Image (tube, rainbow, N blue to C red; front, top):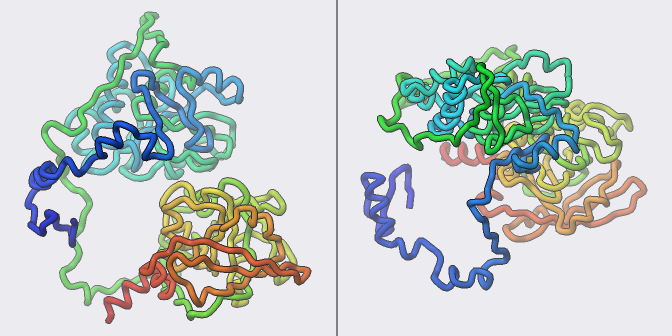
Length: 493
């Protein structure tokens, strides 16, 4: 088990090194695998058995606009033609927090080195985001970054960068149809550069390098050749790279500043007129009673990712100012009632307006709101703002067909109710002028569904059963108003 950062054996003995941990695991290794009868007859023990022939695997390109649209590289020429995807690639991007390890950069650089040695030039622009300063420094020490520089790659800061639109891409404001490839694991519309017409395809770092050399989406490095500067037809070979640096990692400045041993005298001074930094105010705790009179803020239809809930790009300049960044709350979500984004009905004025402005009017009137969503609500980045912003604007409930796991947890931590329809078709019962009342929230408990009364504009009522996954500690978060509130109260106690 792990306790306060220390590693202990099963009998409570403190383990000094990872080798000790490995040795302890080896002593019980027969218990750390499936039983023999499971391997012999897996169909008897699993709902589904999937067999993969590794010799038949080939690189895949995923996208555009969703990471789960996978196309084998051998089928991309056909897929691009049938879907009208631009095959000319403008940028190949490697790194950010995902696929940016030492090994990832090493394997991608081995492809770039081949291009240099074989007399090939990159037809697309190449951008590199090392995963950390330690990775960057070590890769630079070992000559990996030098290879990228020789290939005329742009080396970005060790940060999110293009993955969330932090690169001010030239020409993106023209909103021209184009294609890019990258190793980031998110490729939703407008995410990389704010251009809704940028077709972004996700792939491995080495595939990004290969596609950027060819400059074409339909290039298959397994079979296709390229013409070098001598007019010769040459072919790339498979990538290679060390999983870990043979000389170990190194860094001069990893950016870590140790906190003061006693922070009681530390004063945080923030200009109240700042547009980019704001001290957080605690969210209000729950009063223990049923929440009633809630109004519908938006009924989102289809894919509603964290980019739809809290857009990145230029908005991130306000990430330290919750009130200002909340002006992007749910502006990308598609309203199920009018098929538009950032246009919802305000039941108090019987008028339509932007989502954040409408939420603020409800909040000013002391009216809580509810957001209704579709499948896999909150898919995408783990950004806290996608939960903090609705909470700040008075949303108390997010009721959906299903959640992306991380976003569901983030809602819980901010003292909100993340609920799912017990009967998915009840999503269709939600109308634009509905009012919502909890009937049994005062009995909120683990494993016990909640009943939400929906009052329609004509006065008719329907009860909707809502499931939840809150355990007892998470219900305590809700009672306290947020997990941070609870932690703070425990420290003060």
